[in-house]
Length: 404
Image 1 (cartoon, rainbow, N blue to C red):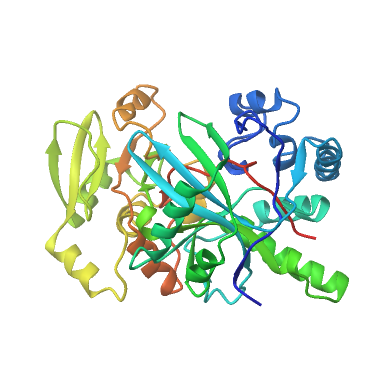
Image 2: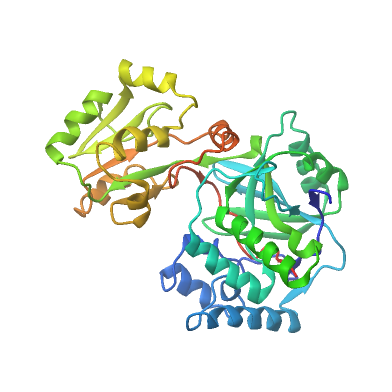
């Protein structure tokens, strides 16, 4: 089987190319009942009704399947007549990114497709029930590949510039999204043998492995529909990564001893303004004061002697959050001890947040680079929770793919 292939996409039937009213953020960046959720559900034809269905317990999954069938029968969603792939360019005030949505052969050896985050059973169970009921890929798994000579990036740009727009719309936050339908096999062949590094969508990828195994047992066959999954593929040169900052709600450590222990591991330099720290350093906001923490010679020596180069988020967790604040990864993920602030928010907002008296201290990080992700994944390790924020997100609803 080929690793990267074309597929017959299913997409919203919008003659004017503006599908902003049909699209939604990825399912895991908003919650049932919040303002985003309410706004999306105000349109009865928005993808949210399939992606994040409503209903009592497991009934919601069959509701999603019924809505999907209804959208198809009423031509709200239409299936392409031909197989192809979708080139998407996103532009915003500080940059642009062009990638490709294609069908990718699943790899449970994790040698060709590599993760850098741990997964939890809850989200996988939820997505698996939805996929088994509706039989469709909704949101894209976002993966990055090395493109040393920019061959893929150049061809993506050529396809984008030479093909008519299928969709052309802004969503959300004034991010401009343009989509073209590509039948270029050369583009797929360039990516065919590349190692893919999962950026966003670790739970969706694990879900599709489980779904594939379920369908193999059920049918006794190996069919293209479930041996592959829909992915958004981006050359590393096109990547924009923002950090996640840590707002500490509470810790198990003695506050009087915390600062003393940090000073034993890091040099503290007071700064007037809150800014993203230089790479290899950590920013700390404490009691209306902001400091840059740089490793002491002793700490630096430990880091250099480590078998693997540590991303800044790992240093923060391994040297401060775990041993000094006594917050382990399970506690960090619980939401009770740490709140994660995405890097698209202004750092100045931290002062405003602290006025709410909900936090003890904050840690700021510089963004990880592709090499941080690659080296972590290549060594079989994972990063701490919320180490990377790949910006911008790909809206759900640009295209769907049947997986049975």
